[in-house]
Image (spheres, rainbow, N blue to C red):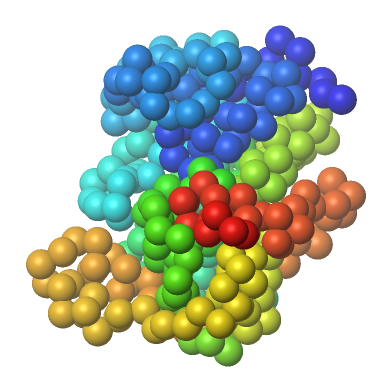
Length: 328
C-alpha cells in the first residue's frame, strides 16, 4: 500500500550505496524518481538502477542544476558524499547548501542519511536523537554543521526536513569503499575475515535496503511528521563487534576461517601520503568504543523498524561483493 501516486523524488547521490537503495525503495512504493548525475547516460547504463529512474544531467556542486532538477519535487534525498572522504571541507557543505536552496524553492522535504560522526565521548554509549553533539574530528564538525543548517532552513518555513542516522552500511549493492568491503575481500571467495575494531566493543551496522525502506515509510507519512524530524535507525547491533566476523564466517561456509586484525600500522605509515588513510585514522575512534543507536522514537512512530534477518542480509551482501563461495 502506498499514498505516493503522482509524487516525485529527486535523489542526489543515486549511484552510491544509500542513494541507490532509497531510489529503489521509492520506485517500489510508486514514486516517480529523478536522479542527478554529471553523466546521466553513463549512470543509466552502469548504476544498476531500474529503467524507471529518470536521470538528469547536473552536478551537486552546481546550484542552478540542482534547482532545475528539483522543480516540482516533493522530496529531495541528499545522499551525496565526497568520494573517498576527499575534501569534505570544500565539498560537503556547498553541496548541501544547493540541496537546501532547491528544497526551499520546491517546498519539498529534504532527506539526509545521517551518521554517528556527530558525537563525541560525552554521548556514548547509547545515542539518542537529541544526544549532545560535541565531535572531536573535522568530519564530525562538518556533520554537525550540516544538520544545523538543515534545521535552520526547516525553521524558516519554506521546506521540511528529515534526518535518519545509522551506523556503518552493508548491503547487496554496497560500494567497495564501505567498511564491510574491508572485512571481506570483494571479488574473492571467502578465505579470511578482517575486523577493524576492538573485538569486545559493540558496533552498529545498517543493512541498506532496511534503512532505505525506513526512510521511504517515514516520508510517506508526511502529514504526521514535524517540519524538522530526526530519527535513529538501530539496524543490526553486535554487543561484541567481532560477532559480525563470526557471522560472516558462518554464512560464508567457512566457520574456521581466520579473523585477522585490520592493518592499522600500515594505514598510519601511509597516512602522510594517502588522503584516504588520513581520513580513516580520524574515524578510528568509532571502532574503539561501543556506539548503539536508540530507535525508540522510530519504533513509536512507525510501529516497527524494517529488519532483514542477519544471515539473509549477510548472504546478499557477500554475494553482491563476489565474496560468497559457490558451495555456500
